[in-house]
Image 1: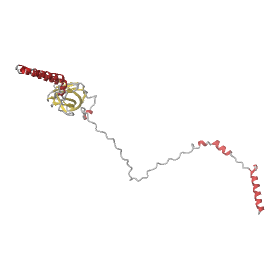
Image 2: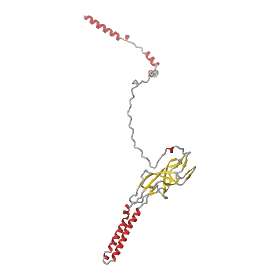
Image 3: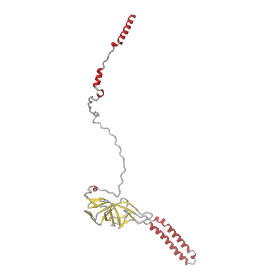
Length: 292
């Protein structure tokens, strides 16, 4: 048995020596690989490959009767309502004409009109009054006949105030009706009851300086009364001793009224505004008006 093991060991050693000899080494031929590399460029192989076939888009496999998910609507921002502009009034037929063919009434044109109602400082802001023209106005291609109606809105008003400030009313003419057409206009009052109006403000008489004069007159009248009283006392032998007292009092009161009249006049109110119906006014256009 020992002999068999030794024999196998020697046989294995001889076989290893034979395989290790150069004569039995494997010689691999790589010339074929080099030829393939020279013929074909590996970096361009991917570009020469055919494109992949296009696949049909995936179809929705959800049931037809299933409703699509709904997203809750976003809440819109709430904006406050715009305040109406007093003195600016638009009518639907204002936009139904072509300026190139319409008849133009130039700005600056004046109309003599009469009021159809009483105009006073009792009227509140936003109230409306009307006028009727009393004289025709001729423009190119058109004559605005008498009887044309104008409407105005009260933009501002107040009653007589202290410090001698009188009443106030501000009118802005915003519409004109002529031959059945009502047009938006922008006009102001330049004369009221035959008196010129500045800045479209119809004002009551200011009474401050009139109050100053009244206060001085009060002191003067009181002084005159005391002088008369002093003269009567001087005629009496008993009252002659006290006769100067009323005059001195009158002088003091007159001085106080004279010096303090600018301060006392603050408590005086100005004049009222009350223009009766049928009074004559003058209206002046501030913008062109177009008729069709």
